[in-house]
Amino acid sequence: MSKRVVIIGGGATAAAAYSRLAQGPPAGDLESVSVVSPKAVGLGQAFGTTDPRLICNTSADVTSLSATGESGLLRYLAARGWPVSRADFVPRYLVGQYCRESYAAARTRFEAQGVRTGQVRDWAQAVVPDGDGYQVELAGGDALSATDVLLCLGLDRPVLPELVSPYLGDGRLLTDAYPTSRLRASVPDDAKVLLLGTKLSAIDAALTLCTGSRRQVVMTSPSGELPAVRTGLVRPAVPLVDRARWLAVDPRDPGAGGELTRLLVAAIRRADPGIPLVAQVSGAADGQQRLAEELVLAEAGLVPWQGIVAEVIELINEWAAGWPAEERQSWLGRHRSLMSRYISAIPVRNARRLHGHFRGGRLALAAGYPQGLTPVADGWRVSWPDGRREDFTHVVCAVGYAKPRLARSASGTVWINPVLGAEPAVGADLRLRTPDGSGSERIWVLGASAHQRTAIVNYLNTAARHAAFVADQLRRPAARIPVPVTTATM
Image (cartoon, rainbow, N blue to C red; front, side):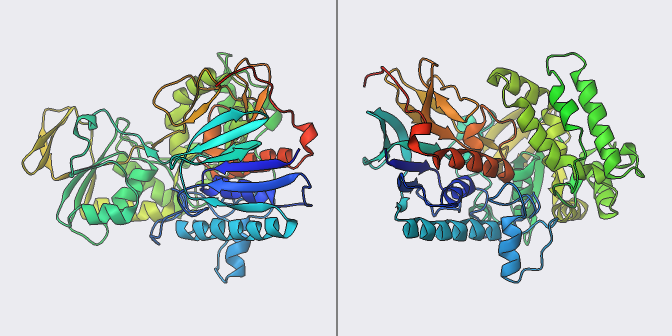
């Protein structure tokens, strides 16, 4: 049977899957590969920016469409004369260009192999069972026939705090930090801004709003925590974490947390035995002070903890892959604060800019989270936990993005980002399980779409691993990938 592959999504995950499918010897049963995305392939939410001041939060070493070996991004930039190293945090638009050109090169390889390929600029809404394959229904009314579907949906739906939900549509409320050009255009230079969020997208928003203007910005979140500071995120030359012991830990064991802590501390000591862990982090309770102290540590090269992060992300994903989804979410919830501070630490360059804005008075970090928000004539009035009232002209939401959601109807149709509906189960092979659970569909989830099976998905190296795993399955002869048997009717 000839394979007609449809990739839904056009970001870096889709580019990784498409590029991997085009590698290796020609697959004789691969008839066509189509990408469904309204935007240019490779230019998703994370790397589709044109703002040169936005830099990656991961180093070039792990920002690659290939999960193993030398970074493809590093080779791409070196070939074009960019003086970069493995540890460098490069502008995001360069990663977008790399993804875009990798897609173009893969398209040329497909054409040379006689594989029909192209992009459909539309939104995919549903995947409908159809005989021995599927129909991918598009928002514009058309449909694509597929034997195999790869869901490469991105993190592009902003989470909206309950605080602002009654006021959606108000021009003084911005529900997303991106694109930054819209943020700058929508907020006047003399505005006073309440910025909801203190993590990665909020930091991008703060740096955008505080640069080259008279704006005053107050950041706030329930935790009030800013990320830690690092000078690089690279894979270690030799393993630092005891992998076998980590994977043997039972998360349901009451002593699991202590055992993992011991493994982490031992790994950090291997990274640099001369610097005690207590000397690598700040214990300041005040967020601004903690940022300042951890910036000093990073600039002095006293943060060897950063050397184990890439390894830990991979280990957590492997360790938690087989857990029930509820158990994984519960574990992640209990450790979210620690993980978000260090796994999602910020580059020293961004920390330096943030610190400068704090010292200059343009930026502040609120001591609490608003208890109330009320529209007034000139903007918004905020009620703080200590009883104070404070007025702002604008509110910007930057609290992160909702993971892609799927739902399956009684007829077997898989809906993309529906409001309601039962979510289909995902197997260890990253394929959706059939409605009765007895087999697997030929529908794969990759990157952020695979959050049911993967703990940490907002990381390009994770998406690249998924792309390699899935593409290598698809390049096998069709007979070795079973077609789902279903009794569902339309």
